[in-house]
Amino acid sequence: MNSKNKKKIVVAFIVVVILILLSFVNLPIWAIAPGKAQEVAGLIKIQGASNTPKSGHILMTDVSLGPVSSVQWLIDKMNSNVELVPSSAVLGNTPPSSFIPTQLDEMKQSKQAATVAALSYLGYDLHIINGAIIAGIAKVSVVSSVFHVGDLITMVNDTPVTSARQFVAVISNFKPKDAIRISYIPAALVANRGSSANVAKTVSVTLGSRPGDASKPYLGINIADGVSYNTPFKVAISTPGIGGPSAGLAFTLGIIDRMEGGGLTKGNTIAATGTISPNGSVGDVGGVPQKTITVERAGAKLFLVPPQEYKAALSKATPGLKVEAVSTLKQAVADVGAFAASRK
Image 1 (spheres, one colour):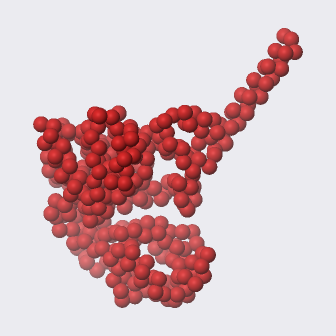
Image 2 (spheres, helix red, strand yellow; image 1 turned 30 degrees about the horizontal axis):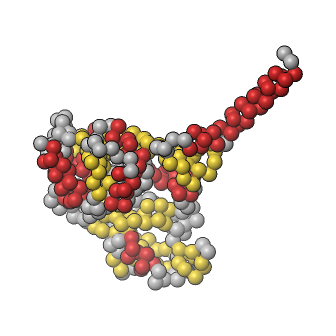
Image 3 (cartoon, helix red, strand yellow; image 1 turned 90 degrees about the vertical axis):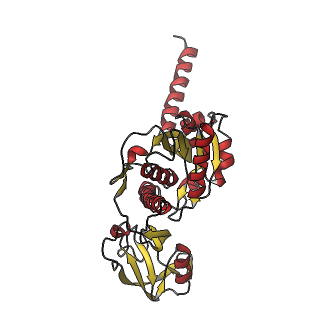
């Protein structure tokens, strides 16, 4: 072997080593790729409801999401179905170690909201108590030893709290080091309070100072609108290993379809993405272009998306998939019914 060939072999070996090393080094970039579609019927169990197989299907969908290496970035860059975004666009202020737990907590809250929205739509009296639910607790929180994710705040001192926005407004009237009383329903009792209506606990809390602005009060919790409720029968949604709130609308439709004996879908395969609030409002989610590809591959003929993502879904939909923008549960049910009627 001459020296020129030896040099080529050495260079090739070095290149291979560099590529191997780069494949283990993640960039501050995440890839959003098409994931999988899953029928919600198999995840929902309702006490007393029929489990007879239906001819129609309601699909939830997710995306493949994660950090990429330099080598994977080159591969994904050439794939028009993959979106590359800064890690901050996915994580926000959430530490990477807390990302999965936060996603699982959001899924838990999403399932509760779906149950309330669906049964309320069907006319059941759930004895709802509105409040501000704790969606996350910072490590530096002054109440980390008092509250848990899922607790529902219902009162500050003598002022009732019925929403996240109201809670923020009430807290802003205080100053750091002020002592306040917070009443809340523990997370374990939020979904079903049982026969007792008086389940709230009250704790005394001393407000801290907001990081970066010592003049503002600080608790160190993330909150969202939430409700405590009683269901007339048990509704369970099994989602092992699935996180995030984007399946809320699909779960809600799935509960309604099960309660109506399959009467919602009328034999059609539909898909839905979007958060759901207890009052039936549909909120925006991410990764809709990739989800559109996924549900179409799974055979969906109708895809319900939040209005904010309508154009993004259309950008990947073929003529065989009808996309509808919905902002409320009532509108979603109406669109499913209209679609079923048009397919007869």
